[in-house]
Length: 420
Length: 166
Image (cartoon, rainbow over all chains, first blue to last red; front, top):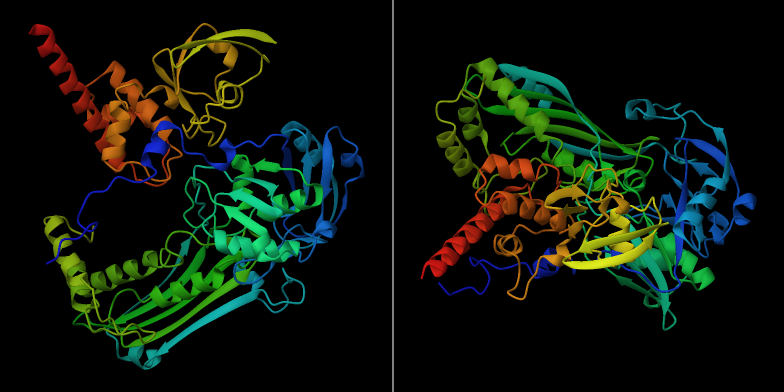
């Protein structure tokens, strides 16, 4: 076998030295002479029409400009799949933390003080916090004129009804997983400035090329008029895939010519970025008395909060994975993404594949218990291998070492009773 | 305003500062030592850890005036003419750095531990870095690195002792 340059060798991380000596620069570590500072005014209500009065704040010391929806130069929308986020909300807020105004002032303190002086008058609407409630026909719409049901993934294979009739054991349960925040350690921070007639945006991002497109579209610039500089990224885990302050900053620089910086506090960071989708997962599993899994039916509802972000991909992945890595002939899955007035949900490590094992692995344990079977044995008997077909029709042609994993685990857990 | 005299990374500095200035802001904004990071501003995450008179402390919870006539070490102060501090070297060699934002604080907590106790037990290491949150690594390689740094320091000390005995 030929000698590889990289595979099988230990390599030092390229940026390790800079990060260990304090040389690595994250956006909050950067300064530009004469720069102004931004502060974001955010919604304090989960669902409301509002009016925004900036007249007092505009007269506060040091204020350079206060941006609201009417100032957005081209398109007041952004979003990774659907453009359902507003750069700055125009007349309706859909969650606590929605951005309404962006205040720019000479100092950070002045910007914060002026942001507090922006007056928002809310006309509150009933708010939806439960996705099952939000799915009802008469539920109030989070996005006016649009159903709260954003996406419905369906998987149908074989005949589950017939299989459950034939099954010797049927286990049926509902599982819940919560909202989770990434809590990347480096708080969102960004700078914008003009350089040789082009708008430069410095912000830690997982998605710099797409950020450029979204900023250009919102501001009405050509893509090559926008430069994205992605410095050191202090953790992300999916939480830096959506735009946060990039368009606010770009707009402020475009309209004033000034360099502008904003850094969120930890509290604001929680409001600003996405969460992991909470899911309710009803799962029904059928097996023969020999321990062969013959049917899985699942109904998953994922709460994407006020905005779609990656909800479609996440709920699809949850739906694809909910039968687990097991050969099951009869499968029926419905996986649904729903808008509510909760924090918006998007990418977070696993993209929907992380929530469902809570459900399917406990199902397998319960089936094993009903049958008086060893939990290892039932998994060994049913697990996918090379050549298996997933419920949605993918034939696995390589690298499916599940049996080897189970064997290795069995050795390590010798003597322990996994049913306890 | 307060006339502050402070030793940062082996250099005495005198500055006039507002009484309410956090040590973190003094280091980052007044001295430009941005290796000290802010992750929460309320003493939960440890990203702003520095060494104050031999102890690892959160610089977001310390006022600069409290450091009057005291010694502070930041991440920028660890390298010497001989290269990286053994803790930095061990973190680099063992792949303990990912996003890097917790790293200055993590290194300084480890350094304060090893300065006081060059051969800590695993529990003592865990205790020393228990105030430093890391969201990337799962801590495993960090613990390995601190153990490795302990070995580097101990073998160096033994070498020095041998040389002194020659």
